[in-house]
Image (cartoon, rainbow, N blue to C red; front, side, top):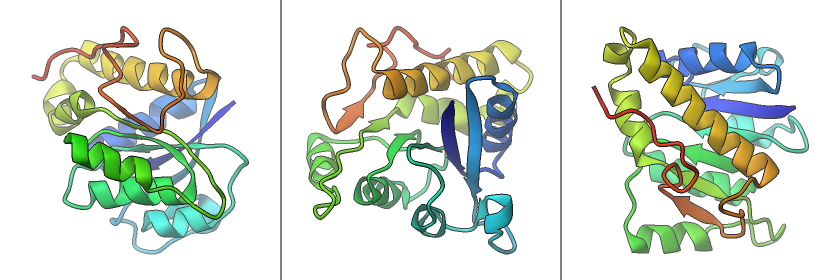
Length: 182
């Protein structure tokens, strides 16, 4: 079972992703994060901030899917590195210096090296999700791409072994390129 936390759960794509993952037999939503929640409800697995969610112990191993594209995306990615949580970040375009900064940002005391996958192609699709609702194939491609990334992170499937800390634009390497933006 692959356990997942969704950041941006109240966005249209976040809601779609929660439903899709909950229908899956191989993965389960462990918690959701969105600033739109009125209050944090740990018993329901709903948090207003990622810091609140990550300070709770949920499972030995889980993955974050961050679908929010805002000015705090890079900061959240650093938090994932700090807490040693593997994540797929959809809303970030990185330079070589950004990648190096993310690679250095890990929890020194625990010496954890959880990988971060940054996929700008998914960001384009997330931004156009409302238009994509009329296109079920685009939605299916998005879910397929995220599932492929989750399986690769969880099981280390080929053709690329998970040995680095920060992965950028992995979908073409995993032969899971999503449909072009609408």
